[in-house]
Image (cartoon, rainbow, N blue to C red):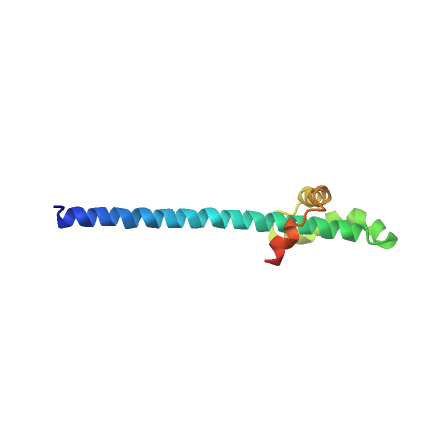
Length: 109
């Protein structure tokens, strides 16, 4: 027959291990969700840049300066992540995957 201390030790180990599994699973799922949402957000930023650039002749002339100005203004607000290089990559990301609906679905949720 197992003693009270053995039963308590076994029970403790089970609850301890269960909580570790729960927290680890939640953290993993959180990272996946954040990654999916950020990917969709970058796709949408790229879409908006492309659509603005293609919005007519008046805007086409301005489009050359668009990424530079967006980079400056967004970097002032968010500090990092919106360099001209990153914005160009977001634009290219959209152009490469423009027919994929994943971003609209992720952003709708």
